[in-house]
Each structure stands twice: as C-alpha cells, then as structure tokens.
Length: 323
Image (cartoon, rainbow, N blue to C red; front, side, top):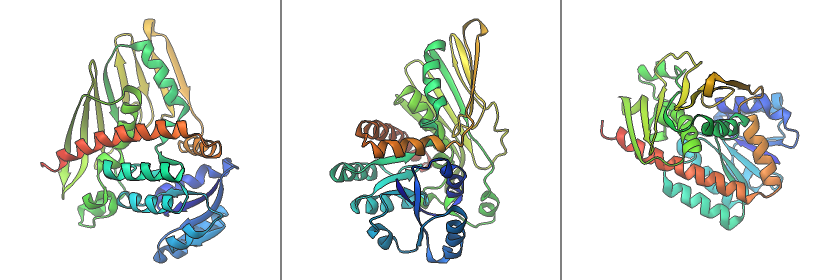
C-alpha cells in the first residue's frame, strides 16, 4: 500500500507511533494547508515520507499513491473522500465517517462504481479484544445492561470557554462529544448488539454544541448507556461494564482502545486479556490486507456497520437541536 496522509492533526501523530511496524504500508505523501507547510516538512523528515503536498488535486494526480487516509476535521471528510474515490484511490476515513446518511450513500455508490475500497477508521472494531468480547457475550447472556464511559477533558475546552471555537467544539464542523468521543461507544454497542429499537440523547449544551452527554440505546432485553464528556476529568480506568444474568464483562481501558478486558462468568470464573500494540495498528493491518487481497466481502460488512452507526448518530444529533 502506498499511503497518502490527508491532514496533520493529533490523530496523525498517533499514526506515526505504529505505522513503521507495518512494512507493507509505505508513506508516500502527506497533505495539508500551505500555512502548515513547515509542520508538514517536519513530519516528512521525522517519518520518512516521500513527498509533501499542499495542493490536493496534484496529490490525486500522483499515480504512485493508491490509498488515502482522510484525517481532517469532521466536516471535510465527505468532500475529500469523494474527490479521492473519483480519482481512483482507495479511501480510509477517520471517525466519524461523514455527517449524513446521504453522504454515506454517495461515497458507497462511488466506491462500488469505481471498484475502490472504502473504510471508516474506527479502532475498536478491529481490535482482537473486540472479537473476544463478542464471544464472551453468550457466556453471560441474557444481557440486560451495558454502561460505557469514554470521557476526557479536552485540550481545547479552556479555549472554548474563552470564546475560541476550534473544530472540536464547532457544531457547524461536526464537533461535540457525541461525534468525537461517544462515537466509539456507539460503534461498540452497535458492533456487539446491532441496531437499537429506540434512541435517546441527553446532552449538556454550551454555545450550541454538546460538551458532554448520555446516549441511551434500547434493545429488546437490554439497555445500552453511553457516556462521553469533553468537559470533565475522568479516571479512564474500569469505566465500562456489560452486565448479564450469568456474569459481567469489564472494559478497563477507554472504549477506543479495548486494551484490557475481563470476564467474570458463572461461578466467578475469570478471564483477562490485554493487547500490547497501539490501538490503531490492527485496523491499518486489516485495511492493507483487505485492499491487497481485494476483500470486498469485508468492505461490505464494515460499510453496513458504519451505516448502522450513522443511523444512530443522525437520530441522536436531532436531540441537540431541541435544546
């Protein structure tokens, strides 16, 4: 895979922490705005990236690049992904995938017409521990309650309180706790239990954006409760649990990582698992293999999952408009 990184934000720094452990992925280019050129050049030098681009059209014309990783603010995902697919590139889009279901349908249709691969970069769905969670569910079933919490005080929250509205807190740019942090909880609940029967979102609103909130997903026999806050300090440990009649599962790390999970099953039998690699390693390992082997079955499965998550998001976002 000859990968071009589109963006230079904090998530890209995370990518650099592990991408060298995946030799099948070659960092062919990085793109950003002209005013970020010095930063882009520093990233290029430190991470052995072939080229820097500040013109997206020129990057798309480069035939050496076969795959794009869209790591831009949320409101730009659709535009840059669409142009990438139209140029014949495979596209990986950071979470949240896009802002609307209509945008999703447009990208999906374009990927199918062009026979390109299209994925949402959502780390918990590709963790080995996610598959173990799915297998543990049957051991403690029936499940009646899931409590997921992913909260952390945002580095941009103080600026927000002072009136500086950066993309992470800009409702017009896809900002807010629901799409930044709670999106991981939504992916986890939908991945484990499927589409919910009912959705409710109770947000704390400030300056038109949800700085924290509680999302409730109702299933036939279970309730999933997803907490996320960008305006609170969280312990970030032992913060999520899935409870059933035969036992419970603890997620002792943030829901974007799933690094540490434990099962306490019937008769207090206990299993504990830990993953040592960076949380994003597994998704990029899978993307490279799927694109190389042209695994359209996997792509279809993951796009169906992304669609179900977007359906939850669209409903939940309507609650922020009423407050």
